[in-house]
Amino acid sequence: MIFSLFAPTIDTVKLILDDKDIPMDKQSDGTFICSVDNISDGDHRYKFQISKKSWILSTSIDIIDPYTTKYDREKHTGIITIKDGKKYEEEFKWQYDHIKLPENNDLIFYELYVADFSHNRQFSGVIDQLDYLSDLGMNGIELMPIMGIEEKEPDWGYLPCHFFCLKSSYGSINDLKLLVDKCHQRKIRVFLDGVFNHSDKKCSLALIDKDYWYYKGKHHPEDPFWWGPEFNYEFEDKQLNIKPAYYKGKHHPEDPFWWGPEFNYEFEDKQLNIKPAVKFMSDVVKYWIGEFHLDGIRFDAAKQMDNYDILGHLDSVARSVRRSQPFFSQAEYILERKDLLKENGGPVDACWSTSFHEGLRGALALVKERMDTLGNLGTLKYSFSSKNFVNYLSNHDNERLLFDIGKKDSDAFTRMKTAIILLFTSVGIPMIRQGEELGEDRKLGNYQVQRTCFPMPWDLLKEDFNIRLFNTFKHLIKLRHVNKSLREEPLNYFYEDNQNRIIAYSRGKNLVVIVSFNQMAQIKYIIGNFPQNGIWIDYITNEQVSVDDVNNLTLDLLPFDSRLYIKQT
Image (cartoon, rainbow, N blue to C red; front, side, top):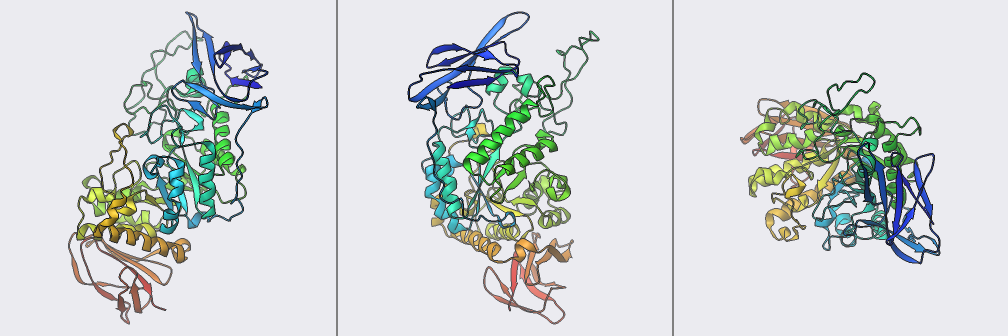
């Protein structure tokens, strides 16, 4: 059995296998290897002890194998299972790989945090709820990060430490495979939320040699918490015998907005002719997409990565191991940028739309700091009509829209109904955050350190307000699936009243949406320039309205009201 560790800047390495020390030999490519014979069948704990000399002293530390697929968080070791002298992985038989999965343009995402969604906080509990998600109309599950972490649950997982491991509390490798297979049985695609910008400072790569795989600190000058270039009083130009000035970015690991060391995808080891961070993360992506048959990636913190080339490279790597089914890549970049999109020569299929979410907060929840900028009609029109954006009312990084509205009454329902109609009739791909469809309105907090467990609030469906909200979600999701114009036709604005903050648009010839962002009711209001005259049906209430011969519709609108009309044929 061969054990190996790539550590080109390290002097000596020992394998510690079940408390037995075994020296390793360094190869010309920087890899340490050793061969161990006669290992008994079963689970074995192992780690590496690395030693590196400095000009003052030598240091030795124990690290977990960066490529281990199982680990013991308490004992800080990797776990390897041996059978007949070889590494053993329990076999899994995929049963539903043959099923054709939904195309990208047909997707409706459900952002899911396993520890809160599942009744037992594991993958098996998610499987138990797949019929619920299928009945709701979901065909895409966006799993919040599932890679191995050092912290205990509840933790969202945005500080990965063990990149080839599952979160130990979620279940086994085959539990995740079974979840994916059961999703595919129901024509639900499963997506990896990939944190490739940074890692926990306890990640083995950071312990081996942080400067080999990572930047010194934050490196994106537009990061919202980056004050400006910081003087680097450590770096010395030995050729000129001077110490000049700046770090690449933030460098203090205790900075409250410093997530962890950021991977340096630019650095190249010219002696070995490799980019170590690129090589490692390519292996990570190949493993997750190939081993678990995942259907796409969300690139977390793409702005902080500040590297379109690596996004495009990892996208290509993922597609190379998932050729038989549709694949979808998306980036979190605040604010969203259209030059990220493949249709504009960028690296990914889609970008999360902060403008859509924040615009609705300003327009419907009257969040003051958003009303004059993202909440203005021009920005709203842009976000509703833009292709290849993932739209959402809220995601894990912000409070829910219903919480921002701050009440549960008829006015709140009207605002939420308007938001739901906009979510599912806009051009972008819609996403629901788990619990949103139930009317979840608890304050969740924006930072992981403030989190407690928030199980799915199923009891909300005992309340009339929440039942109406749930049915509205379900009704609009069904329309999105059955009405091709919502997935294929462009959005056409045919009416706009800036003074009263009222707009109307069509998707194809037979579907019209009217929205009022006005805080005052509008009585006997006339919408002109309707696409067709005649009888139209209110999709929510099933009531009929008549558009006159000059294509005008007269109606009453409550504050923040909306209508969705389907042409009677």
